[in-house]
Amino acid sequence: MRRLRAAHPQWPSTRELTELDALTVAHNAGEPSLRSYPDIPAGTSRFLADVRERTTAWTATSRPSAATVDSACLDSLGSAGAVVVPPGTPTDVAQAVRTSLGHVGQRYGWRNRCDRLVCRAYGFANSGYPTATAHWQAMLVTGRARVRDRCPPVGAFAYWASSQPAGHVALVVRSDPACDPNRIKVVSNDVLDSRTGYDGGVYLVTLAQIESGFLSSSDYRGWSDPVCAGSQLSATPASG
Image: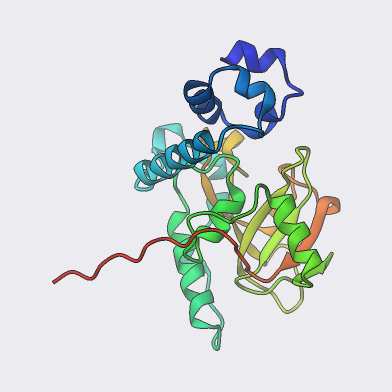
């Protein structure tokens, strides 16, 4: 499978799917389906979504292992306790921030799933959009986007273009009246994986940190209201 993907770096499946995703698609619909991706059978799409959900659920309780973490970047992981939700913040936004911070420190399960991560904070199983770029374009069309505005509020989705067509999005968990990128904080997947050794880890970083190698400030698209179009997670039944 790795040789096949290495031989065809131009395929959308190679650029957009993780190795587990590619194996799942090939297992369900055959290796030729990787050539035609994203044009795959509806049943395969549902199967892939189910595998992704189960993988995320199974790894949700994973925590960093000190033996695999570069001690030089531990400070970059941030601290959930350093974020204070401003008074008057809507209840749903405050809960989204708490939920998002609860993911910080997870080692696996979120590689290339930034759009799902930000919408998961608001209680959605997925974003409802194929990529962060598509999500941003939908926000532009509906007037929910603030183009190139570098002062995103708490709870907003911040977007970037990237080397891949899918782009990137992160959830803002701390804003700053002076719009200082060293004080604005976001929860993002993948950003420090090359330094921590994680694979789809979740981090609390400043805007300046996320734009210091993982992304660029010149690629910043802006922010949008936290609008998702995916399926909502089922509420957990009350005990007793």
